[in-house]
Image 1: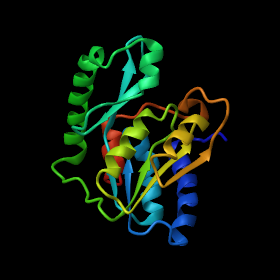
Image 2 (image 1 turned 135 degrees about the vertical axis):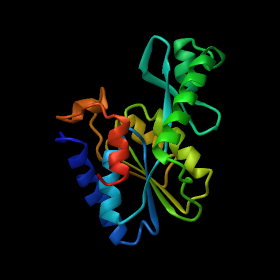
Image 3 (image 1 turned 60 degrees about the horizontal axis):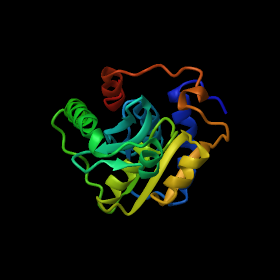
Image 4 (image 1 turned 180 degrees about the horizontal axis):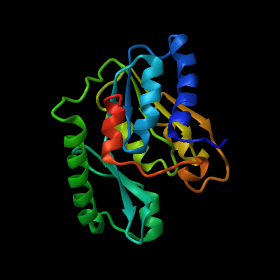
Length: 213
């Protein structure tokens, strides 16, 4: 499956979620999108379900030799969630990653302040929370997001993305009540290879999606 862009992927994902919603499986939903890429997808889901849209800022902790290779993630002020097996395999200690964690935490708070613009985070207790991203490769950021949300006591927790690696989907099935992925291709290298248009988004793009522009 190859998506034209994030908007089209979001519309197709929304159709699948609307089926569950119409069956009563997603009562009182709120959509939390992972910026930046997940917000465009999440907006389509929120529109289809007539649900509020908000952001959940998660920052990936990348390996020192390759920042795109996620070995952990942070959400809010929670402690980092590391992939301990990856750390052992690469010979990296959590202590050595402290400067990276501090840098990513600062960027996380900057984005939260910019995207929320003084708004309080939505109340999640007792609701169906749908965490949306534009794709899941290793699952490190999605897993951190799901654990953060789980701590806020939702009634139901759903992870939704247009495309997921099979390995990541299996990991996330242990964290969420449902994992909705339109495609789980075996040969999975990067999320962007499943989109014809996978332009990098800006903070302005996120704000436009949040405010319906």
